[in-house]
Amino acid sequence: MDFIITIATPLGNMEVLLYEETPQHKANFLKLANEKFYDGVMFHRIIKNFMIQGGDPYSKTGEGMVGTGGPGYTIPAEIKPQFGHKKGALAAARQGDQVNPQRASSGSQFYIVHSANGTKHLDGQYTVFGEVVSGLDIIDKIAQAPTASGDRPVTDIPMTLTIRQMKKKEITEKYGFKYPEEVK
Image 1 (spheres, rainbow, N blue to C red):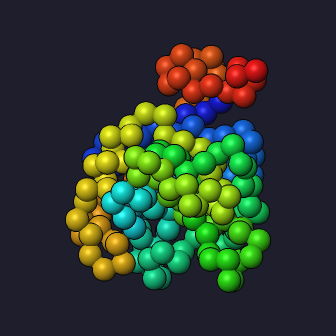
Image 2: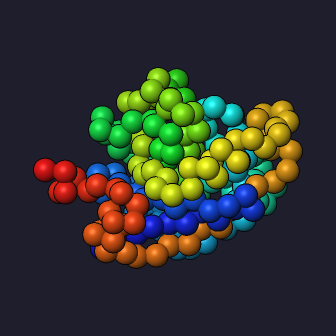
């Protein structure tokens, strides 16, 4: 069994699968989704042909500077060479190397790659912990949103996450995702 996470937005839904090879990130994302942490949080940073970013609770509450919020902890890096920054890659945001040389991930902020060619220059620097398996067109719609200063969308784009459990075989059949044990 595995999980499919639906990220519902006013522009449509994306379905995401989290990698087993990044267990701390997977467990954390599932925990926060189950706790409804992400519900009402915005995609607060959009850079067309690069990525869309969300997961900051300040984007929902307005209590702090958007882009700096989180659950109060980080996650150790789980950077795996087999997971690159292709279009639809789900990766953990983090502070820069100068203040975070261990490349620890934000406890809640994430981004989804928009560029059709990927963002290979980020490979090996950020933890990629999942991918969009359905709804790549929704990334395109979100990336088209007009932005203001700080790459913040002019119109809020909130999200709601739901989780459903599925058999791996069903996931492979429905979404074409190949698990490592199937590739051998």
